[in-house]
Amino acid sequence: MSEREKQILNNSASVIKEYLNHARILLFVSRAKGTSGKNSDFDFAVDSRKPDLKTLEKFYEKLDDIAGLYSIDLVFLNDVDTGFRNIILKNCKILYERNN
Image: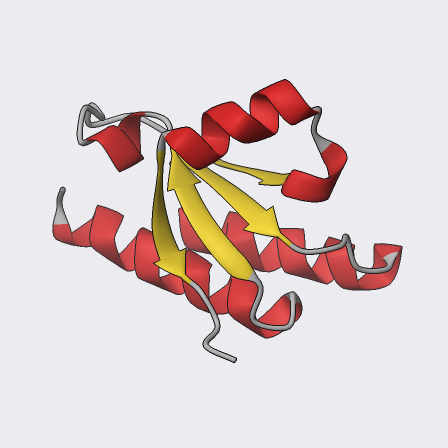
């Protein structure tokens, strides 16, 4: 992973924590498996409720600024069906999990 990709990963995780009350953040698909190519997107799953629309707009704007030419895909685990959720949880890398 290039320095730029590491920066995108770290900065995206920071924004997700900031806007989504320190939710559990998962990286999945190729970047979690270590099989990503130089143009692979960043796929995040968040174990949190969606925020209100105004907050969500600001949140996505910040992620777009961070991503630059890369693409960031984000899903909320509460919004996906059980099958997809299980696939994500089985094949993910935990980037952040709040300790209670």
